[in-house]
Image 1 (cartoon, rainbow, N blue to C red):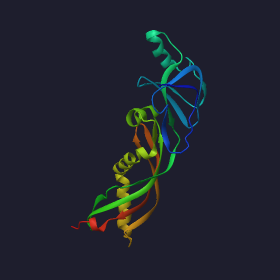
Image 2 (image 1 turned 60 degrees about the vertical axis):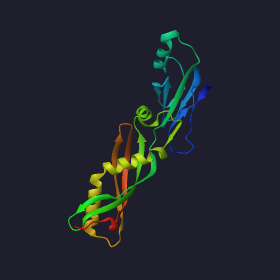
Image 3 (image 1 turned 60 degrees about the horizontal axis):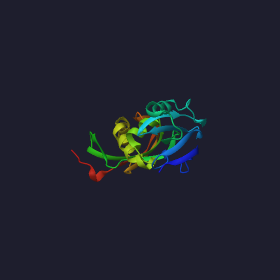
Image 4 (image 1 turned 90 degrees about the vertical axis):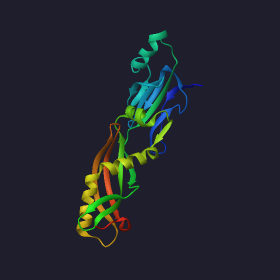
Length: 220
């Protein structure tokens, strides 16, 4: 059963929601003249019959044929336009998400001239933001009503570990040069940026520590 909406807006109460669908299930009945409120850190994407059409940015929008031209065209083609009409609206949270943590699930192996094969574990923090909301919906979110950072952390962790080979080599070079007496070493903050996919970016990525796993080390 469709939900009838006259004022459409969304607040992220958790600070961790990347995408929120209104309504979370089914579709909504909307008529021209309804008010759509999109905040500075948001974008609103209109879907109908499983396909994306119009995207609206920040501001208070009175919905009309002028700001929903693609949906208007689709609805007008077969039977003549009728209002209200059924749609789903995805609110994308395009702010920078901070204080996200990553770490290796399995040790990363490196060849050392003196020690042979060594295995390291690494930990750090990163920030993330959505760069292309529609692409994120089509590739990762799908039809989920709510999509948060917890749903994507495992994916991003694997991308970070795979894409930061150069940083791992630098970390091991420092580690092997100074030969600390402890097996865990906190690194100076080393931040950089990384592109994870066309839909997202990591504005900053930091290694905070690396840990040597001596029991998993194989000497030459």
